[in-house]
Amino acid sequence: MADLWHTPVTLIGKFVRLEPMTEEHVPGLSVVGADERIWEHMLYGRVRTEADIRRWVQDILSRQAQGTDLAFTVFHIPSNRIAGATRYLNISPPNRNLEIGGTWYGLEFQRTVVNTECKYLLLKYAFETLNCIRVQFKADARNERSLRAIERLGAKREGVLRNHLILPDGRYRDSVFYSIIDTEWPEVKSRLEQMLER
Image (cartoon, rainbow, N blue to C red; front, side, top):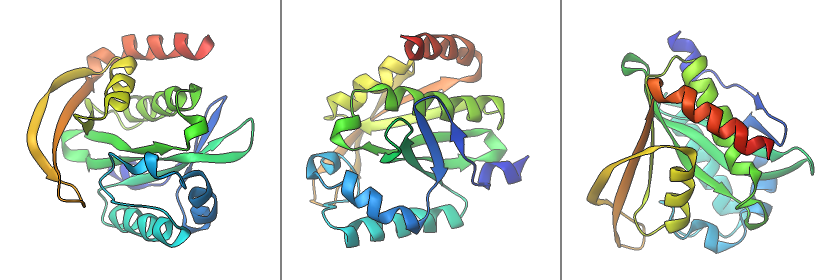
């Protein structure tokens, strides 16, 4: 079972396909990630050029090689274009938990079905294949859009870690933590499936 936690997998829905991230995705990611507003609340600093994206992908893949992360490039199926990226992080097989995060989408894919289906596919795999008992989310306390998106999934707010992280520009970040646990998954699953049918 532990091997599954670290084995790249492709997750396919009706609107999105989550493929294991590779360096071959860099050109497409650099196109969709070109707007600096995407990175405003992210931990990576300014990401503006294809070289910046390549460094970011290499960093994420190095984390994956260490066994802490499992990265996905998000493809929008109707347009067959890269929409953004997401990943599992803080993977802990002994405790049967992980975090879903590092998620970003091009502006045209924000506030669409893309995020809903991505989270549905990631949560379904986490709870039904990896047998997780907890899936965690966190976001910058100033990032109202991300906070609303996490709450919309049905995740429970657990609290705020004050001065949790120092951002590349030197600002202190308060992080809001959320989770979904295994006993809540059936209700969350049903809710997400209803949202995807609309």
